[in-house]
Image (cartoon, rainbow, N blue to C red; front, top):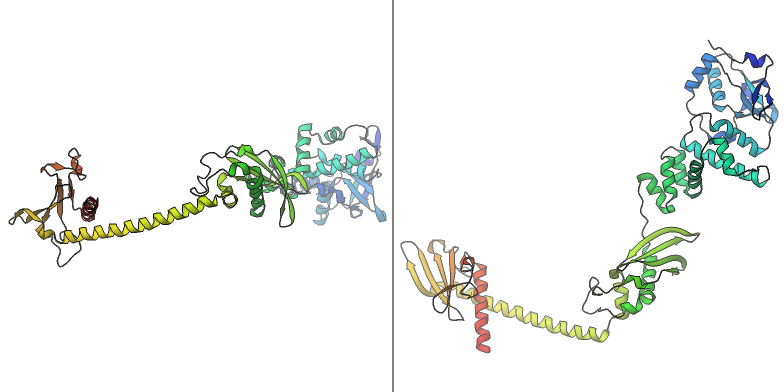
Amino acid sequence: MSKGFAIADILGGQARQDAPAGQKMQVVMLPADDIEPNPENSIYEIGDVSMLKADIAERGLRSPLEVLPARAGKYMLLAGHRRWTACRALTAEGVAGFEVLPCVIRQSQGEDDDLIALITSNATARELTDGERLRQYIALKQALERKKAAGGLDGRVRDEMSRITGDGTGTLGRLNAIANKCIPAVVEMVEKGEISLGRAYECSKLYKVQQVQYAQHGYASLPDVPDTVLDEAVKWVVECGLAEQLKKFDYVRCDRWNYTGGNFDAQAVEPKELTLDVDGVDVLVKIEAVNRYRLSVTQFDPAEPGEVVARTGLMDSDLYDKAKVLYINHEALERFKAEAADKKAAEKQRAADDRKWLTMARRELENFDHWNLVDKNTRLGFTVRARQMSDGGHLVVAVDEATRYDGQTPGLPYRECVAARFDANGQRVGRDGAVVAPDWQKWWYNPNGALEQYIAEDIKRAAMKQEG
């Protein structure tokens, strides 16, 4: 059974001390139905009161509630929302003795002082969540600032906040940074318990566009500058910032990856803040060198010029397209086109000649059985024949008769063969005709296409010698 109220001494007419010192506290019994929660108490969370409810049911309500007179004979809570909630829950469960509750009636000192009193009663009463601490900080700071502006506070706001909450200047500074620099989405994460005050404080050091990503993942990068803005920034760099430098480069024979020849110097650009016209909208950016090889384009929030919203790096390759249009040497370009056309025609002719030499070589190999016979071993089935080379030497090819293809086939009509090269004196040499050559260059096994190409090159050499 509930013990009810353990305040016999109070009901007996005694008084106790309460702030400010020396002021007596008069306790009265008020119907619980006439007491209403304070809207300002939304700073705090009622949370789970099951343990508090059990304690009150066992030992009684040992501390009176503090209330303010309200409309229509009602009273509004100033301190004791969790105790009042626990008592109402007990009554709802049929536990007798909590229909009326002991209260101290305070007189309103004005909205700000009433709010400060509410916060004072809650600030150190229990361990607050991070969300409660942040909401408490914001509400208390605003109330104290209004009070100071009205002449009701002599000292510093931060000192009074520290006295009320017990927080040191470092903690108050971090709360201030979160309240003033974090975007609403991050503040909401703190209030919902999704991130800690520590994570939120790290967010406060970042640009706004980075804060949500950092809050969620612990890291954040700046978004890239939009293409339309970057295009205008590149235009300025090409036409103004690095114009004299970019005019000197070769856009005819080089591409975007080598046109500067290692002579690009981004540091020739002085840091420059520009207002760019992007589709009729003014966009504030800053262009500056990061190092010799890289520029940085930073875009700012037009409503907060110091607030960065995007950043992108620029290399010389990013400037190539616009620079080429402006600075290419058209006379050199025409010469290059003519040279390219001549080169293409020459390559086409060379390819046709190569096909001709290859066709001739293939026909020679098809007629392998008519080459000069060097040796033939009918019992073993091996045949050795030779072809005279343009340098007077010979190409000697040995085939296995058992590997002859059935029917007509392009090139050598054998699957298995060994080839070797000899000079005009009959000395074994390398494939290139050199006397001194590694052993692996002095013979071929199953050369197939390689042998065909080798003979084609010799036919070509012979033709060129005859022409020359």
